[in-house]
Length: 259
Image 1 (cartoon, rainbow, N blue to C red):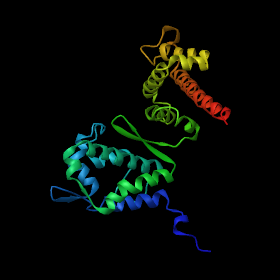
Image 2 (image 1 turned 180 degrees about the vertical axis):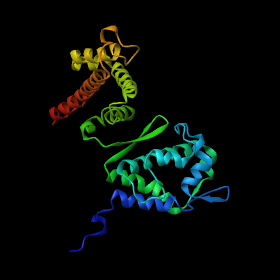
Image 3 (image 1 turned 90 degrees about the horizontal axis):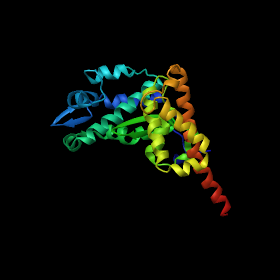
């Protein structure tokens, strides 16, 4: 039996999508100053050296190799594919932040379709989501564990929570930064969060103030291994999200009472 076109599923794999993206972006798809470039040559010529997150890489292609992408190959891993999309989205921020490039960069129709239409759909299909974090975009796997918080806390706090849950064990400095920001959010309505569970709030405060999240590690905890410090940071994060979830749960209870 025939299905409506609106009920058909796109079964392209991430590799299929990658080949489609590379085919378009390797073509002459960008025009500026009456000259036409491939997307990557355009980045290399005009933008890459002005990107503050390029680290010590001297050109776009060297950076792409670093993140696992060879634009002349049809082979790619899932992680490298997501890295490529993350790179493209960050380059778009760079373009849009500069009036000259924003006003004078002309995309071919296929390139415009890839960057502005296809990429969000691809991320959604692969269960990823892009988040604006300060002046950069970071892509994270969607995490149903925190969906109940999305309507409770501001977008920047959601982004911090998702960022933390996607940091590997070596990201101890980033974990400190995120925990500090989340704790400051609790402090913005400290009495409310204390009222949910004062003992948990005290434990959070201990980790923040004594274990190097703010200032130096207290003498009492200086002999803790990095493994234990990271473990306690993760405990602290889970306790913070517990308090935030308590707010959500209380709202659910109030809604049920009103029925």
